[in-house]
Structure formats: structure tokens, C-alpha cells
Image (cartoon, rainbow, N blue to C red):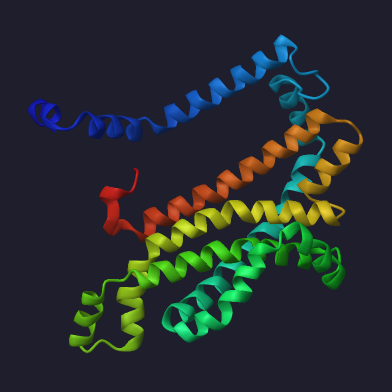
Length: 272
């Protein structure tokens, strides 16, 4: 880009381009500011240290829990619940969302049940699933799948129904078969909206696993938070919570990578 072209661009566009080019630097700067504010609050004494431990105290406790295997053991236990739950909820929601997008009758039949499933908090359903399927990993996977299911379902339906009718007519004029219509038109057109729902589902799946572990479990980061809270080990509580945040961010990042992989035809709209 020449200097003349750069000066002709809007300021907002130049600012957006600068932010995207230095995205990692902004992320690190944001984290540093957050840690400084956190440390400043603890130093002022506005909040007692036993309620809000400082970032360095939490980091030291995290390191000890990492070395003795506490954090890795519970991290992988939660991850074993989150990943299958995310996959189960996403696949089920995608298939059902496709059927609902194709059939208004099916939508009218299932809509009351789908809305009711979201009206009832997962915290109220979790104890029932623990009773029905036991305190093992199966009930946690189902809780994760339930939390993921609705946002992915809605985005699948919205994405499929947003496919322009003129493109459908074009495919029919080319005598495209039903599977070609799905593979070459509907899936690519609905993919941006679907992946938007998957972003939400990826973070919600972590919440579902923690809710299940709160209700009944003998391992996992949610279980570790409960134990540390009962022992008034607040630095370990913060360490476990931050580990959950890291897990959610990692899953969110994987969905972003999937967007870059599958939405290359939208490269100008995808942050590099």
C-alpha cells in the first residue's frame, strides 16, 4: 500500500488494520493492565486478603498445584467431559437444526420443548441427570451437551434459512442433486452463522462441566474449587477458576482456527 493510498483510507479502517496487526500485543497489554489493577486492589486493602488473594500469591499456589499434579489431574478430568459433551451437543444440534430448517411443521412441534429446555436452568436439571446416569463421566457429558445444544441449534436454523433463494434457484437450474445442494450451497452459506453458535457453545460447555462437578463428582476443576473453598484455600480457588478460563479460551481459539480454515472465501472479513 502506497502512502497516498494509506492517507485516502478512513481513519477507522486504518485503526482496525493496526489493531489486527498488533492483536497479540493488545492482548498482552490488556492482561498486564488487568493484573496491575488486581494487584493494586489487594495492596489498597479495600478487600481482605483472605477474600481476594493477590495475583502473585495465586500464581505461586498455581505453580505448587501444577508441580504436585493437582491441577493437571483435575484439568484432564474436566477436559474429558467438555470435549465429548461439546461434540455430542454440536452434532445433535446440527442434525436437528437442519431438519427444523427444512420443515416448518417439525419446528412447530418441537419449539415448545426446545424453549422449555432453555427455560429450566441447567443447575436444576443437573441433579436429575446425576441421579439417572450416576455421578460418573456420562452425566457430565450430557450436561455439557444440553448447555451447548440450544445456541448451536438456533444458529444452524438461522444460517440455513439465510441462504439466498436466488442461489437455490441457480443450483436447481444446474440440475444439482439434493446432496450437491447441501454440500456446495447450504453448508458453506450457513457455516459462518453455525461457527458463531459454536463459539458460544465452546465456552458454555466448560460451564456445563463445572455445574455437573459441583452437583456430584470426585474429580475435575469444579470439584477442586469445591474442595479448596471448603478448606478456605482461596488462592487455589482462583487458580482453578483461571485454569477453567484458559480452557474456555483454548476451545474458543480452536473454533476461530476452524473459521479461518473453512471460511477462506471470506478472508477479507476474518481477522488475520
